[in-house]
Length: 330
Image (cartoon, rainbow, N blue to C red; front, side, top):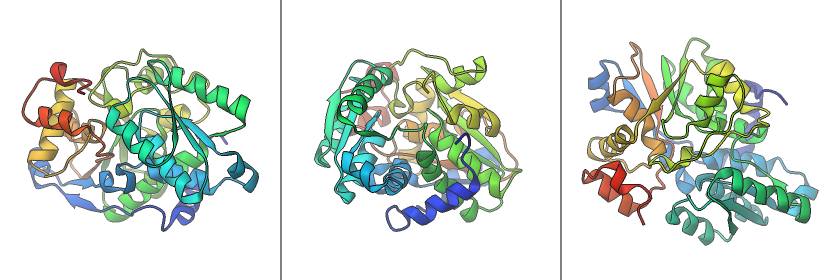
């Protein structure tokens, strides 16, 4: 499959019904005032397991045949996909192995352990973790369900886009956190499939934004993975990317990059003004609006994609410490 379509996303929605939450959308008075147009928050951080990742993981596991289910599943993850896959696998009684680098925060490791999945810590990047995944696939026969570059994962994430366009049918712009592109491509396919004139903008951190670098180069490229407050957006897109690079290239209207200070400001705003606890990746849409990097006359919807932040780190950020002093807080 070279593209996930609206039809695939609607089928995924039927497949995962009852397994994930249909999260609410709320009007932000503070951001609406700042922008001069209605701004809505898609409260996906309230999803079971604390992030949107459960949608794709649930759809991928539900799509396995009996022989694949008997072998178990494996994935590389920066944390949230691993937690979602562990949760979905546990519900179905499947073995799950999650491979992660040393950059993944301890709170995310603990959450995965509590769900009973096996954890392998390998190297200092997603690429290192992926090498362990490849080994387990080859030697133990596990089924790889990657965090983004897989049609069932993308279709599952796209169900979020269907909810957005149903909850805010007049949306002019949708802001989507951008990493490997599973969420961004799925949401864009859903939104533009229903409302072609709606703009979909990817938002990422400036430190190690692999998809942005790849789009600029016109092909997947490798980018050094660096510590960032938006740790869920870290990692490469895969030099052999089969799906999400082309979909992001064809469907996204723009990509915005943010500094660590800007991401920290987004986290603080979410807490102080919206009364929401979000991780760095979940705050990038807010940060993009606060920095006036997005201008829109019509309604804007931004996705609060996850809440799985280390609470010691969160406390230090909202108390005003500079990002350079809070990165990789223990």
